[in-house]
Amino acid sequence: MVYSIFSDDAMEDCGFLKFTDNDLKSSFLQALTTMRKHRLFCDVILNVGNTDIHAHRNVLACVSPYLMELFSAEQETQHGSGDGSIPSYRLNGGMSKIALQILVDYAYTATLEIPDILVKDVYLAAWKLRMDRVVGECARHLIAELTPESCIETRSLPGITKNKAFVQKVDSFIANQFAEVNQSPGFLQLPCVQIEVLYQTKQEMSLVTHNSLARLVLDWIKRQLSEESLPMPHLLERSHLLYLALDNSLQDCSDLPPGHESESELVQDYKRLVLKCPNNKARRKCLAAPMRPRVLIYSRDIGGDREEVEGNFQPDWSVLGSIKVAENMFVSLVTLDGALTRISIQLRLNVPATTSPIHTPDALTFGTKNPTDVDGPELFCEVANMSGPKCGLGVAELDGKLLVCGGYDRGECLRLVEAYSPEENVWMQQPNMIEARGRVQIAVIAGTTFAVGGSNGTTELDTVECLPEGASKWRKCCRLPLARSNAGVCALNGKVYCIGGWNGQSGIRQCDALNIDEDRWESVHPLVTGRTQAGLAAFRGKLWAVGGSDAWNCLSSCEVYDPEGDQWTAAASLLTARRGCGLAEFNGKLYAIGGSDGSHSLSTTEIYDEENKVWVSFSLVFLH
Image 1 (spheres, rainbow, N blue to C red):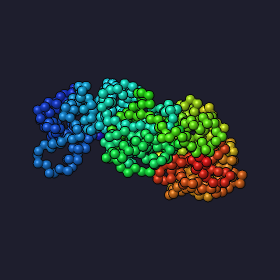
Image 2 (cartoon, rainbow, N blue to C red; image 1 turned 30 degrees about the vertical axis):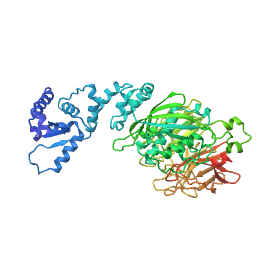
Image 3 (cartoon, helix red, strand yellow; image 1 turned 90 degrees about the vertical axis):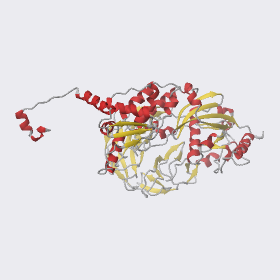
Image 4 (cartoon, helix red, strand yellow; image 1 turned 120 degrees about the vertical axis):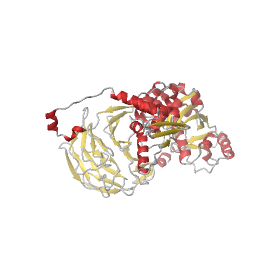
């Protein structure tokens, strides 16, 4: 500016003219539009199909970050070597010429005029060009115009899962209107995977819920496509007969060994059908089929895989809707790695090949049980979902409810606290913590909940906070002597113990106890082996630290702390080394549940046998 040569004081002394032309913006846009129509000073050509669109790079770069990067990269590449010709860019990716023309007009007029039939095309083009305001307006229009007939086409838009807010609203509409959606032409035209699930009794068939079964089937399909590398056309070419295995997963009946108790004529016919299939391949070793009727009500939400963060694309495997359409017949709408697919599920009763009864280990071993208990299905009740996905959270029992604090949601540390009521099967929001904490553990003493240490996502924490019974706010407590995450936290004899953990470098041996009355941490004898992610529980008046990791290896070793002698002693090692296991006392026995062996998540459970002082497999205890 001319007056930039003057100092501020000089400007104040001499005065100056200031004029704002309110009409310039509109006349400026009109002039640019006129120049574009007459191709005056145009310095770029966008090509889609056989159509050339002349425009000005500066204008397009102002509304599209994608074009800004494209033009900038081209300018750097050709700097100093231009031949005077207007550069031309061919835009690929299925972008329609009409949609691009509408977006270019918008860049020059700041106005969108889109016929309803073209909104999807403009949305896709705007998404590829990263024109966020246009994307938002198109998404709002599409959501407002959703119908049971149009929602399938909208949900099938390429790249829709990258727009988290948009896809969530579409999925919510589909779930709420699925009774009508499943009869729409768009749904019926989707590729269909045909599934039959084998059950041993009519009773267990009557207890199946369609949502739970749909998620189990989705798990099975995902394994076939991902782990077994089965092409999608091969999955669609025939019906698949499945059974519920002991690990609570669905397995193909063709994997059952010859002579198995469940190998009825129905299963034998299915095996012959599979062998005739030209695309049949060698099967992996089967998982054991339960000989006692069982019902699993699935509760894990595969939909956690549906969440996507820009620049970190996650495959979309989710159940969008499910409904019972006839006796023992269900249909579901799922996404298989982002592709909408229909699933037809039929329940089949497995009639034994012989009329002789099947002698199961349960019937032979638990002869004193009521026969109805033996013959009836094992029931797993469906548990309501939390408010959102999370890991690395603290869990404890409080007044008959399951209290969950903090954790991570895709890298974001949470302050969120919620409680699950088994009686009502609902989650209820509780007062949020003062500080966001992941990899945290909690303990409860006399109705007061203590959240100890953890991580804020970048550093380990030494802070501690508590929520007194009936309080509406958390309050700060005495800091830990050493910041740590993934420590074992447990209440014993009126004190809160913090055992081991991670200090950013290794599993540590340090142990401390919080004197609640004095709000002071006291040092206790260190662990024999430094460990993080160990299972910790009070059992028979002592602390048990089970498994964990030394930062390099998962541990099977166990240590027991006697508060009277202030000493750790070695106990029997676990059958399987594991970190992150759940450790709890139930009906007078100590259970170590799940965890990870460093490469796989574990579904196994071990129980401590006090008489023989060894850990035993839960399945062996159950069967023998």
